[in-house]
Image 1 (cartoon, rainbow, N blue to C red):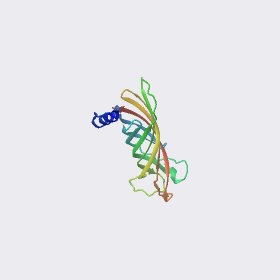
Image 2 (image 1 turned 60 degrees about the vertical axis):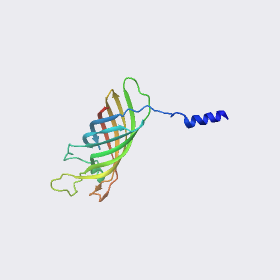
Image 3 (image 1 turned 90 degrees about the vertical axis):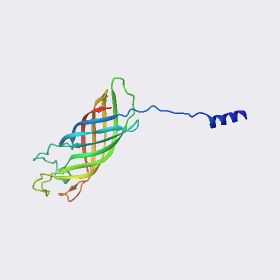
Image 4 (image 1 turned 90 degrees about the horizontal axis):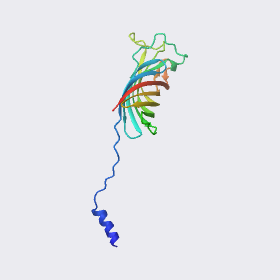
Length: 194
């Protein structure tokens, strides 16, 4: 009986218990680099990647292809889908980091990403009706994306290599229908982490 009363007194009038977990470093990374989009467009990509949890990161950014497509661009076939080229985009891509041990000299990570965004594509079919001042029709559409990336970091700087696929539905004047397209993008970037 005395033990039960002592335990009850300890529970009711005892001090507060504090359970703590060590805080995570924020790990914000600003990144910029080169992009090969749709195997035809070279461009620039940039953004901010931030850690939410130990395994979950979110990347917000965009890419642009400032170099115009050549006048003599030749699609591989006469289907409407081969005349559409991915040019620019904005995206939000959460990522799941593959857990692993880090070596002492440098750090490396593998991350799988899936997300959404908006993309701009050029339809270069010669039968398209465009304004006299336009060479190609530029169309904005929503998109889904998925991909993977690998990065290596020494202190606060590092490099990141990525491959992604963008799924979007532009309208083709030639086909007179929406096309469901999956276009690849390959990235090489440098980043700074704080």
